[in-house]
Image (cartoon, rainbow, N blue to C red):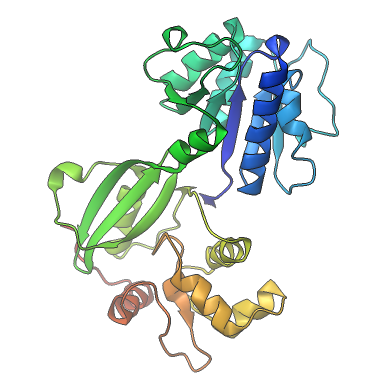
Length: 312
């Protein structure tokens, strides 16, 4: 199953909260919420509470992981609460649940949590000057940002890319520090060295072999609220099926027209996995695909007849 919920952990040591940290935490929380990114932290007090407080009016998930023997955080600012047996289990769970982390403040708790993130190959960005943290305190794997804006810019930047050569062209998979953020056919020259293994590449190979694939993994979607709503609904169109633009417009239940749906589908950043190729006109004709209509036709044929398109 595809998951589009992105979780950002806030790392730090709550007892070392300062006025500067409180302001930084609030900015981190608000910036994340505006982008639909959920927050996760342990023992939401001090610094962390400021981040969680500012997101109350946003439709995102706020997650707290806490040791069983400690006082639970304010339920008004936490939508999901998880209890663990000790701090080690807490830090381990946070690092597994989060897609990346921002470090505000310092302390022994931060170091233990950092170790878990590094072990799990998750990106952590330290906002410089917060909580007494200095560059020499941090492991080399931790990235640095001068402020909140720069921290989020880094998190959304491309971390690595891989390529998959198919009969329809070269697919380029781009991952930022959260998840897969773009998948499209590319004009770039194919380089086998760049054809690194990842879960989506393996699933795409099976897809092009004619196997009925239900893609699983995490996607980072960046666009308007309406675009993201359309893309998420597209994920529900089953393999081998199609849907009319007008039907999807009715499903969204607003004043948007079929044309608006078609335009949003054209802006789809993650082809095939978000199956915009399964959208047809009322008469069953091909229209408005982010790639070529020939590609759209061949993808539909692949799914309908479960034929095979070679992967090189």
